[in-house]
Image 1 (cartoon, rainbow, N blue to C red):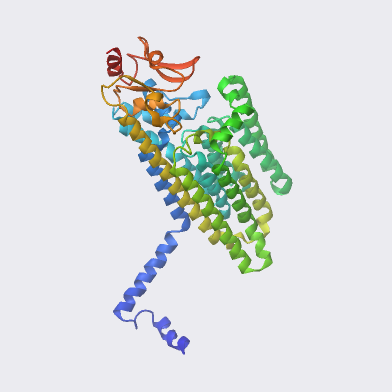
Image 2 (image 1 turned 45 degrees about the horizontal axis):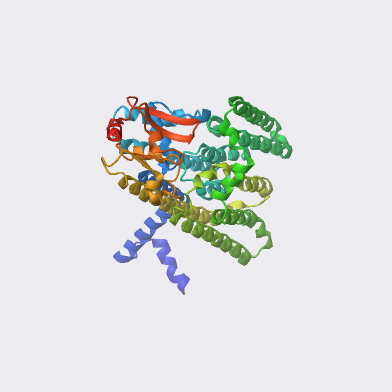
Length: 492
């Protein structure tokens, strides 16, 4: 009887409905269209975009080396290109141009911040653009890689090492998809960026070359294609290595020290951060295995597997939130820059095996489940990065309030007790203390290893102090910043 009663309504549409029922039907149709338009991918990018925008507004990219980058860009009126990181030229010129239009340091800081927060967003979008028309299920891997694995060091936005790994996902996915013709220009462009941004290019292009060799052995029809790209990536890796060794930079060589790597692991990864990575890797294994478990033909087991993935990600997200809430726990998160290649390799390996073994599987059936995971990762990214950015913002305000006008010209870190073991406890505290005061600062905070008497002299003021043999001195009458007030207070 129910089916018989429903049949006339289906044939006559909404004509037989009363006004309330017609209104409800129209609202339902509108909701249905919105569901089709607003997908989990849209919501994922919305979470990421809002989280990054909040970080930009709160000054996240100025953390650690970031403040030194901006100070040097403005002070020298030229791109800051440490250790041959030539891609910084493209990133920094807009700030130089803007500084010729306005002296408002807040505006210039915002421009700097939004330039750097756009990079992970661009990396994620390019990864999605690469796979969406071919194999969108592969998008889960850069989402886990950029949204969670590099999240541990994401607040260190200016880290070229982390940037290189995030951008490499585009090259990696393009390789798995046999370099679609319309995507090749982007693969080439991103490869050029990676080549000129960090020595990690050596490892990343070696990975891409080995991936091509593996794929040419598997795909006989594409041997010429993969052979060509394998040679190209090998050339890039070798020349990047020659460029690295030819520079003979003591800093870069020092980064390869096992003692330093052990120290960086202890300060950036040991404890909760590494537990989070382990959880992410376990989730990745379940994500990879889920399509193959469908052969068991047990919906309950598939549902349990998906619920387990969600639960593990929630646990990882919870640990990250607790970690992010206390800035003193992530005070050395910048040291994570040494590890993103190695922590991302397990995900890349699973993506490779899925692209090979999963060809016989109907992976599209699992897109809904993967979409829910992607959305959850976006929410975690938004929450964790926002919390960290608020933490950095509060510390920045504390530092600004600790520098009252005309009090004294120089403070040591010992004068401001709360700095110890906080994210501000870094050699970049000096340029950051100047940035916080605008174009005409009146005080300076010197980092560890140097005294106020050593920092301020008749010649100028020491801006960065790595060691006694590596100091950057700003002369009193030079460049964009006006330090005359600092000089006068120092004399007094």
